[in-house]
Length: 276
Ligand code: SAH
Figure 1 (cartoon, rainbow, N blue to C red):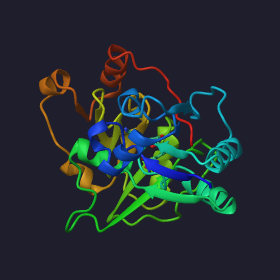
Figure 2: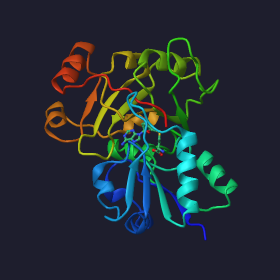
Figure 3: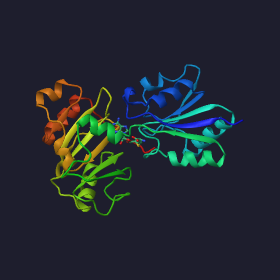
Figure 4: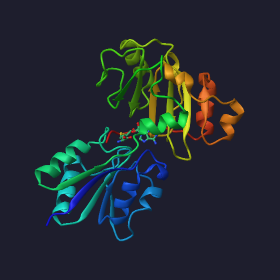
């Protein structure tokens, strides 16, 4: 008899944001294949007898290809094992979960998807940004920017409504190019935006600015998300003193020199974010 494969969302980082269902399958799994985004606190919840394998892709390190991951899932599934494919956030948002489901269906394996809190929701909660708000934002766009460069327009929509909130996954650090794309899509240069780094983790940090000044934003440690839209005005505001003394910080409209020295003081270096 064939086993079952669970595609499980691990949420954005805070282990308390796991669903009870995710926790139950992690505790009873035979095999767990996880991404780089899944932290040690969550992996410590996995059954001690389970085989745990990191198949993540990060910072150029050699990792399993998607075809290899699909093959692993199918092979373990055919061995009558309880297999968990554990992904950061939600497995069906920029996580290539759809491709894995297809491969498993082809092999006639039973698949169950357990949703997770996607990074956009974790980041919005971290910065207290309402993603929709009466009178300010009536739609929500999730996009990925992993093609961002000065010349590549990636998958950007041709036009973005000023009443939309845009959440950019894998925003990278080509902020000037990203700002150009946003303006080309019709957003005002004065539209507020926030970079949220390591949302829901102890190192969480929020940098608030406007599209026009995005180019001078510091390179906060990955993973980061970019949230753009009028609703970002409603993000939690704190005094500068509080910003540096609490775990979650909002640096608002810092001039470039100040942001650079902030980045240096925090030991921020270039950390690349790679698509799943
Ligand atoms: N399936 C995931 C997204 C995978 S793509 C989800 O639903 O959240 C990976 C991207 O997600 C990262 O490059 C980053 O943009 C974003 N991300 C994931 N976790 C994050 C976190 N804790 N804080 C900020 N961004 C995060």
